[in-house]
Length: 287
Image (cartoon, rainbow, N blue to C red; front, top):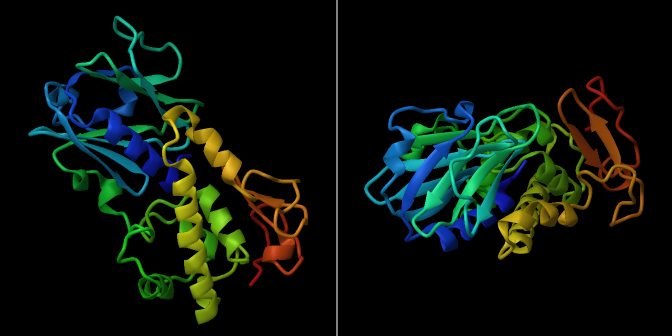
């Protein structure tokens, strides 16, 4: 799933390639991708893109005097830029294509979704706050006003495992499964540690790991073409998705805990005092 760093890079890429250009056609191929009907997608046509913004993991295309096109790529979605779109309308039901946006230059982009879980979401709205997921977002962890004191206040109201707290978009916007693993590894903290058990020193370390991990990922992604962002993300991860490989910090074997629809990765030596976590959801909580 694209998370804050990849969506930030897509925002920068689209700012460079979309702003100042007119949308001439919006072609939904998979109708299920559209989560709104008023305004219709045709309301975007004839309007110039004036800005591209990021809200957590949401991409927001703002148009001149028209509606916003807000997208959440979810787990299997992606944006594919084309300097020249194919001639003729796309064929429904053929391949992963969900929606196409064409510019007056002949360029544009496709929104695609791989896999069987169709969660890619597109909203055409008068303002981004009309999207329920955007309206519920917590603060952006890279915002200038997101300081350690604010982070500590957010965690002080929580009574749950830190892994789940980091992934909660209503608490902190933009962090998902992969970067929460990376942040916790950098902070040398168990994913099952309870927020209520965190000391002031641990909160400070976690805050530093959060900001540093995300900033470094954004910098790695900056200037990377949209089609290469997935590979760039994977190459920069130290523990997530690397079960069985040596930890780049201590050399211990990276372990995994599996759940019904996801998994987490961690280093026992760096994060749990050398003790492997029991796999599956019956794991005992390590404090």
